[in-house]
Structure formats: C-alpha cells, structure tokens
Image (cartoon, rainbow, N blue to C red; front, top):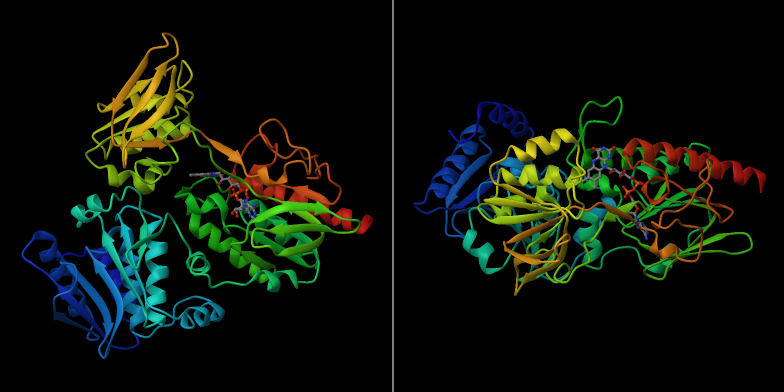
Length: 510
Ligand code: FAD
C-alpha cells in the first residue's frame, strides 16, 4: 500500500466528487520508483470504479498521464506526485473527470482562446511549497485547451535530466524545450507571460479612482478594503497580488489565527477585496507617479495611465541582493534566496548561507538537515540571530560559522563552484569550494520608482506621518515600503488601514 491511511481516507472523499471516467496511462520499468508508481495507480483504480489503468510507453519512465477515456488531456506526472504534489494529483483527477476548475470564467475563456502548441514541463521537488501552484495552474490549462500539455517532473526521480539541464531551483518551467520561468507563478502570471492579459488602452480607459492603491500585499489589501467600505471608487494595481506573503510558508503570529500559510492568506485577501468590488489590476507594475493639478497619475510599465484623486503606496520590499560578482550570473544556477523551495536540490552538496541574522541562521538550520555541509558567512564580528537559534546552529555537526567576513565573489563557470571572502581582521582572501549560495541579508523597499517624487529616508523607505501621509499631498503610504520600524503582516495591515482613513479624510477636506 503506497498511500497512508489518513491520505487514503482524504482521497476517498475527493474521489466521490468525480463526475466522469478517467484513464491513467502508466509507463513503468523495473526500478523501485516504477514499482511504487504502479502500486499508486492501481490503488487509485481500486478506490474508484471511475478510474481505469492502462500500461503504455510514455516519453519518460516512470510516469503516468491522466486522461479522459476518449481523449488525452496532456497532463503527465513523471515521478510520484505525493508530498506537496498530492493536491495536484487529486485536482487533476477531479478536473479531468469533468469538475470545473475553481477559476473565474474570464480566465477559462482566456485559456480556451490560446492558439498554437504549448508543451510545458515543470521540474519540482516534492518538498517545494511553491511548486504545486505552478503544476496546478499548468494542469488547468491542459485540461481546458487541447493544444496545451503539461508534465510535472520530480527532480529526485529524474536526477540525470536535472543535472543535464543545470536545474538548481524549483519550480523551473520549460515551454517547448526552452526555459519559461522559475519560482512561484500563478495562473494569471503564466497567462500574462504568454501575452494574454488586458492591454494598456483598456486600463487607461478606466475612470479616475477615488483611491488607487499601488501594491497588493497585506498593506495594499487592507488599505483597499478600508477605502471600499467607505463606498468610494477603489482600485489596486499590483505586480503580484499577495506580496511577500506568497513566499511565506507558515504564519503563526497573525493574531486570532493560530496557524495559516502564506498563499492561503493571500487568497483570503483577494476574496475579501473582491467582496467589495475593488478593481484588482494584477500583474501590472507601476513605473512613475506624478501629481497634476487635481489628480494623481500613475504610469504602468506597459504604458497604461491610471488616474486617481488619492493614492496609497504599499509596494513592500524584496530580498536584498549581496551585490557581488557572480550573484546575478548564477541566479537559479546555484544562487538561491528561498531555502524552503530550493534546499532539496542541494541534497548531499555543500552550500553557504550569506547572513547571520534570524533568517540566515534559520535557513542554515533548515539546510543542514538536507545538504552535506553549510557554511554561514557573517559580515559582523558576531551573529545577529536570536540566542536560541544560535545555540541550535552550533549544536549541528555539519555547520561552520565564519564571522567578520566580507563576501567578495560567487565563483563558477556555468554554475556556482565556490565563494570567495575576505577575512576583515587580517585582509586575507579565502575561497571555499561549494555548489550553492543562499543569500539571506534582509529586504530592501520597492520604492526606486518614486525617486524624486516624495521624501524617502536613507534606506529608501517612504517617510510617513501618523496619518500615513507622505510629503506629497494626496499620496499616502503603508507597510514595508515605509519607515515603520517593524515589518510584519499585522503591522502592514494596520498601517494600510491608517493610510486609507488618512486618504478618506483628505478626500472629504479637499
Ligand atoms: P509586500 O508583502 O511586500 O507586498 C508588496 C506588493 O506591492 C506586492 O503585491 C508587490 O507585487 C507590489 N509591488 C511592488 N512594486 C510594485 C510596483 N512598482 N508596481 C505595482 N506593484 C508593486 N510577517 C509576519 O507577520 N509573520 C510571518 O511569519 C512572516 N514570515 C515571513 C517570511 C518570509 C519568507 C518573508 C519574506 C516575510 C515574512 N513576513 C512575516 C513579513 C511580511 O510578509 C511582510 O511584513 C508583509 O508582507 C509586508 O506587507 P506589504 O503589503 O507592506 O508588502
């Protein structure tokens, strides 16, 4: 039996929801993974009379495809979709059986209208929490459009392929054999990347807003909900709705909710915004803000112009780059920022973590359980992480901590092969051979696009007063992009509410 009892019980309930028959075509050999895969598909077939199994030869062995009896859908799992991919398997079974995917009708229409052949392949690890979103989005596209296919490939089961393609971050998506993208991508993001989204003139034609929120993280969502609840015309323009929360696994300090996960919180934020009819313009990046006599004008990267009586900037923050030679060249080729996502790809290898604060030390502890060896490189003479984390770190046998060291270069040819640092007390240069570098040196505010527009402090954070007002009348700001001392979800949401009430106050006085 490949499925554990609790998983089987869950699956049993879902399989009751199947609406039509599904044919699993399985390609197996004599290896262990093939044996487990065959056991899995046979177990599925034994659980529902709607599921049939047929042995065939597919492009990869072991793999299986999920089809309608009369038509191949193009959904294939190469490797066993358990771990975080279990949900992807369940959804594929339900959707192929005829249950409608939970996406807006406009998105369904968009997918159905895509012309041309699109063959996607996604390399995943079963412990990657960013991968299922991508796998499930591409599977939905395959279910809805016969000229789109998608194969999920478990890197652990196809190690040679991963090595040959130099894949060092998951998920990594290929389209028709060429790299398409890596990291978490929503269905909307994939569609936008394929050039299927609203065009600039459609956005520019919109009537002016009362409140236009730039940024769709916790601060932006909170600002928009507070504004919309006043009955005023509210829009959100966001490069990626959800913000940093989309990269967060467990959240245990969102008061009144004991535990949640980032993508779940982001989905709730979106649902709450939609409840008030807020105009969400996702996957759109603002590049310029200007104040004319009576309106705030925001220009987007695609050339669209949005107008509003007030604006709330909540563009948050992004990972800080270490800024040494090799970092950009080897991004996703050994240089990584998300230990939860990419750690498993470095199994049995040696890696460095740059940064000895809480996030760096947490990353090192996490990685030490997977990789052969972790070297923590800290610029300051002492680690800055909490004492309890430092004690845990020092108890691990495969971790070395190097303090007072300045990273000089991440070295490599086609991928990372080492790191060079300078001992700050002696000036001596040292080189360590390793295969991966995780950069964990904090965040930088997304405010470069506002250069010269409003006051920012020396860290680039927008300076706000206690009503959330910036130095530019009618423009407010909230969350991690501002000079608030602590950067947390609940704090961003609170400051979003403040900025929104500040903007409303401004509207009624001007
Ligand atoms: P963000 O979440 O950064 O959102 C910014 C938004 O602006 C995004 O939608 C982005 O796409 C958009 N944007 C950026 N530039 C532009 C532009 N030019 N045009 C249009 N849109 C733009 N906090 C906790 O309280 N608890 C935790 O457990 C926790 N864990 C974390 C784990 C990780 C790995 C990280 C990275 C952060 C964590 N945080 C946690 C911090 C928390 O996520 C942030 O404080 C919070 O998300 C900040 O919200 P925000 O809305 O200000 O900004």
